Length: 129
Image 1 (cartoon, helix red, strand yellow):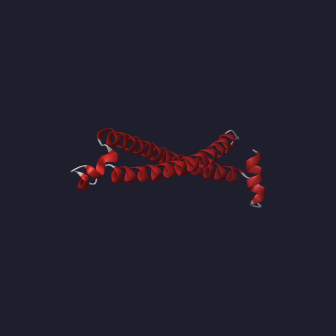
Image 2 (cartoon, helix red, strand yellow; image 1 turned 60 degrees about the vertical axis):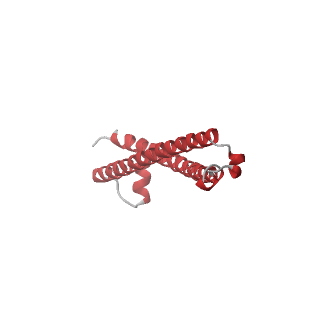
Image 3 (cartoon, one colour; image 1 turned 90 degrees about the vertical axis):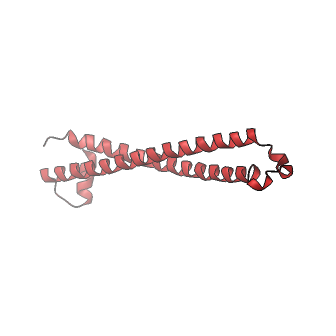
């Protein structure tokens, strides 16, 4: 109830039933929007987790199959294996880690906002019509 009063006072409005409806609609739209954003970020986080896991497995496979230190003496040295490939994979891994950190921060922010709006919406829903 406090949020509604503050909202109405802030906007210089008189408190009416239509104001309650307007506030409910606004909070519902905002909560729906934040829920969609949270779902998008969660899907992005899962996608990045999968990419990171695949990169990690690929790095492990290359390291197990190839003798990176002796690549220069190998007849396959011109096949762009081992060190160059590992460096590229490590760079991709670092990029994914940065994206994961950014996504985690955004997800945390959206979750906090969503919780706030859901709390306000619940409070408003309990008001008599």
